[in-house]
Amino acid sequence: MSFLEISQGDSPLVLGLPHTGTELPDDIASRLNETGLALADTDWHVHKLYEGLVPGVTTVRTRIHRYAIDVNRDPKGVSLYPGQNTTGLCPLTDFNGIEIYRSGSAPDEVDVEIRRQTYHAPYHAALSAELDRVKAMHGFVILYDCHSIRSKIPFLFDGTLPVFNIGTNGGTTCHNQIAGRVIDCCTQAADYSSVVDGRFKGGWTTRHYGRPADGLHAIQMELAQCSYMQERAPWTYDPEKADRLRAHLKTILEALIEWRPS
Image 1 (spheres, rainbow, N blue to C red):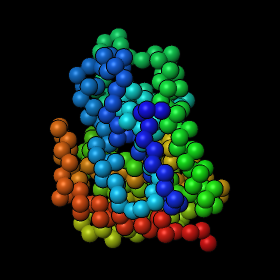
Image 2: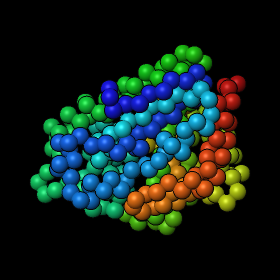
Image 3: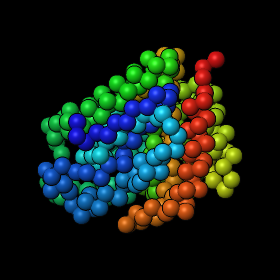
Image 4: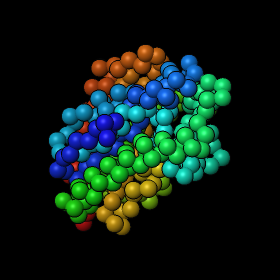
């Protein structure tokens, strides 16, 4: 699949990169309005942020933008956060609640199913295959799902988001020692705030794959974008901020690679 980027490593760690893509098929782009074409809700530069931090990591990334289809949503369209504002499988609004399609151009059920089969299913087939491959090598695997979001989005949450938002769906998606290692690294990162299972408890990917009893551990990291970039168009990467953050991300990934089940 030309829209997928897969890099195979030999460590127990797999990085999922579901929201860093900025590509849109022409037939979808032509239906978006100015708000949609701005692609404001991209997880900007996250693949760059994690690139080369530790050796042996497997990565699975889609280049397709989440406005086409969100591969971190339940393929059945079930909300991850019932009762809270969120965006769906094929988003109709941006994170500010503003419509992203031109009038009369929003996807119908047929469109959604085509996109699911074309983009969502292949992404997860690839991710699942890599998780199986790595688990066969080590007897277990750790999926670390990489995300970022603007630190202030009143439509989605109150106030300012912490820098490190760790998601384990209430401690159900990974061994508590794995969560503990990530939490310790974040807590020890001077001048950076963190929270566990706050506004973001882990998306569909984390919840779907996280089966600790089967040796499949999943944890999500949602970073506040203010920690490494400019949080407005043109969404500029800030090398100085990013390098400081990357040092802590490296510590996190090293701690995960070194973990072994007892």
